Amino acid sequence: MRLFYNEALLIKVIWAILTFNLATSATYLFNDVLDLKRDRLHPTKKHRAVASGRLSPSFALILALSLAVFALSLAKGLNPLFFFAVAGYLALQTFYSLGLKNLAIIDILVIATGFIIRVYAGAFVIDAHLSVWFLLCVISVALFLASGKRRAELNLLPSGTTRKSLTNYKRELLNSYVTMFGNAAWMSWALFTFFESPRASLPVWLFLAELSRATTVNKLLMVTIPVTIFGIMRYESLIFEGRSEVPEKLLLTDVALISSVVLWIGLIIWILYGGVAITPSTFFE
Image (cartoon, rainbow, N blue to C red):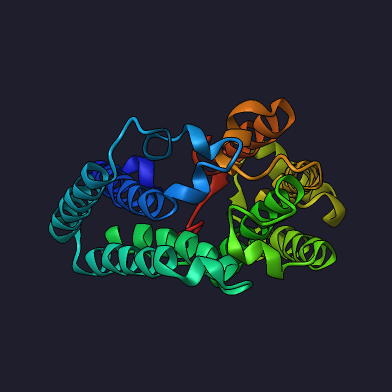
């Protein structure tokens, strides 16, 4: 199912993205209110709207509730399962803000679960099947990002004054988590590309396949594996430099990371939409 060729499904996905943005904004506001005192001790979080005093806690809570209700109303109109995914995400993040974020290991699992819910929500809204290898990749990347976030926070705030769970983490333990999940991420993506790649369709590749079995090209997505490995290696180096506390900021500021992401996306689009492959099944089928 090639999404960009189906206008109806593409519109649904755009609305789903908007809905989840509203839901996540609601959870961030709620968490910022509860973390007000600790955020004021944080070198960067102290500049947030609630912590800095630009937004009052009471107004932030009203705004959070309004955004959550609006997100649920939009989700209900898109798909029943998508609605439950959004509701489940809001509930999970509420419990996270109320106390789960203070439990070592559990906090990482909850952060990762949030990413997984997002992926399933996207599949629900267009009624798509998720490849098991793609799902494993998402789980691994989510755990990698979450453990990397905690590792960077520990490097920045060794005393744990702004996050209770940091006092229960050892640097060596988080190092092992980052390494383990980083390896799992690229390996699960490699397995996805091996089992789910579309077949080559360009005449030149078909000609090469006729010349020798060694030049047969039938696993096109595997060309993205080196880029994936580089991206993970680069991000991991930033983690150990203590710069991954805000992953989204890195994706907008680090040139090497931005380049690898752009190249990776470009290769995916070229393979799936550039007429170089026959795609009976890709990410979704």
